[in-house]
Amino acid sequence: MDQARVFVAIALSFAVFLLWEIFFVDKQVVETPKQDLQTETISKEEEVYIKEINTESVDHTALIKEDALKTIKPARVVRVNTPLYSAIISEKGAVFKSFILNKYKESMEPDSPLLEMIPPELHKGTIKISLAENSVPALNDAFFIADIKDDVIEVNDNSRELSFFWKSSNGIVIEKKFIFYPETYMVGCKVIIKNGSNQTIQDNLILSLFKAPAEDGSMYGFEGPSALINNALEQVDIDDIEDKNIYSGELKWIAVQDRYFMSCIIPESAVAASMRLFLDEDKVLENQFVQPESIINPGTQSTFGFYLFMGPRSTKVVKEIGYDLDKAINFGMFDFLAKPCLWLMNFLHDHFISNYGIAIIILTIFTKVLLWPLGAKSYKSMNEMKKIQPLVMELREKYKGDKKKMNEATMALYKTYKVNPVGGCLPMILQIPVFFALYRMLYEAIELRHAPFFGWITDLSAPDRLFDFGFSIPFMQPPYGIPVLTIIMGATMFLQQKLSPAMGDPSQAKIMMLMPIVFTVIFINFSSGLVLYWLVNNVLSISQQYYTTKKAA
Image (tube, rainbow, N blue to C red; front, top):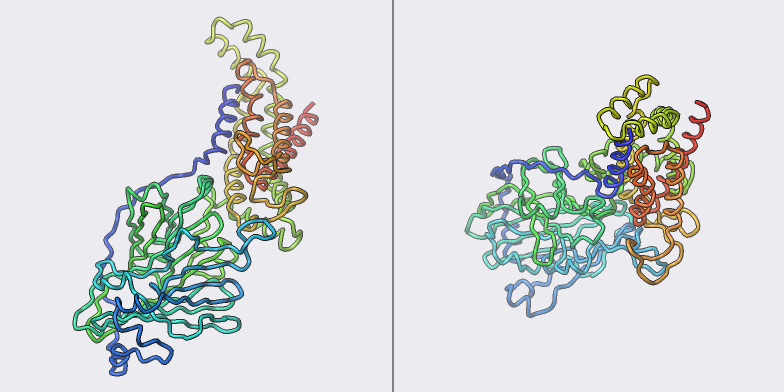
């Protein structure tokens, strides 16, 4: 029992710190099948369109030559404003240079700017198109022309379309059309390739997402590229890209994820395609959606339809979108436990109490009630062990020179008094999955981002700090202050340890008494939402242990 308890305590501490949930199984790379998209013969009107692009609002002088275009004027940008976001698209590549979310801020500071999905590190923008075999070389540095004269589009009541055109020197016209909607983060995207040349285009269209290097702290949850391939979620660790960077199958979407936000490319229908990953020298990630190879003959055109999503990793938001995008929100190996906890926390907040801290307390009480039988069994076994502890100490003293006889006599004593030496540990082990599930959920739930509790706890997703000392403290991440909630949590662990049976081995007893200190140091940088859960759980456990002990007395 002594050794088992030490093992459980040490395992818990390392498990909490390392979150042993990173498992990857190499999958065989499947070659992307060739697929001839349905092409349309270009009408005579389209031929004229390809030759001249007769749109009233298009600046014809800018379509003369690529080299000439670069010297005429810098790339124009178009701003799109909706109730949910404000986007800026550049004519250079027709890429998104900015995507600001109107309902989220960068930080808790009163003067904090709104959250930018495309940070300065991504100076080339995102949602870039290219061709795998580079069959149209000038496309990589293409300057598109927007089909409107205005620099700002307001999307308030109805959807609005915005197209960008580019024409190569040999008559190939590429159109990137975006459709913006007023009440969703989804953006429609169509890529139309019109082959006005005398050569066949046989290539794979690529649509690329980009992600800036992750900040420190991403080890606690997943951040990076992911995809839904063959109805299974594929999350790729950044460090594994060098070993394997192509994942093929039926793709429903690809994404780049942060702790709370993500950007996605979603084909209009699932297609046999590939996700291809690259890291540049600055650690900027490129996640490519590689379409099946298509053949576009002279005088024909092909249309590729997608949806784009740039917004919060919120189950409420992504479930409304569909396309199985909710599978992008995954809380690790115990996701099946974390998702119901997240639903219950949101249900409590939305229908009963508009404070996520109190919702976490109620959630903790609910889970404790469900696990009450396991806890009662554990504390009952520990109480029985405490009663025979003097007899165990006598046997240790009597057979201290013969470990084999000491163990035999101890086991006989357990049998006589019908005590299970691991009875108090097994229920604790069975509760570990619940802790892991709640840990990941409370760490990654966007609902807790900048959510206040009370007093100095103004952000349940950040560590609790009372005051700001302005100087560094060992083991503590900034800001540097008094982790009040964490200290109280450590005190409850110390009290709980005092209520437990004393260890027979003095060295093991010292290790057990150090566990509250170890846990306090580990939790010092955890989100206050998780610390609040652990603190309330400790208080409930102490109450249950006291009640069980008194009842058995």
